[in-house]
Amino acid sequence: MGPRPPDRETEPCMSRNESGDLNTGVSARRVAFDAIRAVSAEDAYANIVLPKLLAHERMSGRDAAFATELTYGTLRCLGTIEAILTAASGRDLDGLQADLVDALCLGAYQILYTRVPVHAAVSTTVSLVKAAVSPRVSGLTNAVLRKVAARDLDAWVDRLASGDRLGDLALRHAHPKWIAEEFDAVVGPDETAAALAADNVAPPVHLCAKPGRIEQSDLAAKADGNVGRWSPYAVYLPGGDPGKIKAVAVGRASVQDEGSQLVAAALAAAPLTGTDKTWVDLCAGPGGKTALLGALASQRGARVDAVEIQAHRAELVTKAAKGLPVTVHTGDGRTYGTPGSADRVLVDAPCSGLGALRRRPEARWRKRRTDIDGLAILQRELLAAAIELVRPGGVIAYVTCSPAPEETVEVAAGALKRPDVELLAPVSITERVPDSERDGFVQLWPHRHGTDAMFLALLRKTA
Image (tube, rainbow, N blue to C red; front, top):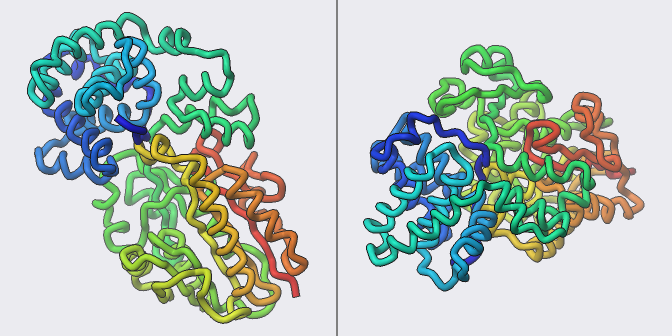
């Protein structure tokens, strides 16, 4: 099977009661297997396919939680699991049928990363293979998984270690080596392990209290959550379905990572002289930042023009910004608008998404370093368009959900070579959030701040 997808915690979270009964979790394992198959064979997204499977099976509670853990955990750790399976089986996994490899990965994840007893993990996986793959390979399944179980995870990682620092860190923390290299280039060798490990911890749900619609403290009380540490609008939700919270259902609040809130709000907080009526979001989909900007704009008598090139994402922006002074335009941000017509412009540029790997189990194994090269061209073009669109004295926020230098500091540095662009200090974040400053810009991190790894360059077009 080819490169795989992934995002989920690598720490065991199964209770002894769940894992000790061979008859418990059989349906959950089948749901997890079906979800993994859809991801690997059909390029599906786990966060889309898994809820459908759970609903179809009418699965909830502990069984649903178990299926989710198995799905996300297996997908997130695929690279490491496959390396161990290759060593344990003594064969190239590409020579095995893809559905068998998926089942082996599911079984190995239980053995290596959870408290599921070995006998339960092996026997249930063998039963799954008999039913869903072929009885002919059940013996092979049993043999390979028992070889996997002969060592714990640390022992396997030590055995497979090559002596290459970043390669070994990538293996231990289940990332492609090139991503470990990107992180290492930013945080340095003392923090790289922590940055990688943080991607393997499932993030809590963050809510955003839309300014003027609900207060942060009121949302925290109504959602039975906790006020966020950094954003004045953030609420941490301890669990449950956020869609069932009334404030979210009626649009007074939304689900939005706290880091995303901070970088959007920083644009509105930047000092500005002269007119302040026309704000533009050049890459608006799916609309989270647009909605927050719209709420802030409504408090100042300003309006937001939201530009999104994809029609279905433009519809999401319209839904997210309902009732706010936001006009949605379907079009290319690189060619939108009249030069010098905007007071504030947000460029939430399409990027590699390396800053949100903890949210998408399949993402890290699907991405390639070459993806960044093509994206950097688009990012530079969008930022150049924003500079043309904003008036002299106006402000631009260049944002990506990535720490990779090629799509963050290098893009911003290119813009700053222009004689009509200067760097603004992002004090609304750096004075509030420790260890967030990066070369005059902002870089947030899951392991430092509990947010996605958002980057922000705050720029002003000079007169």
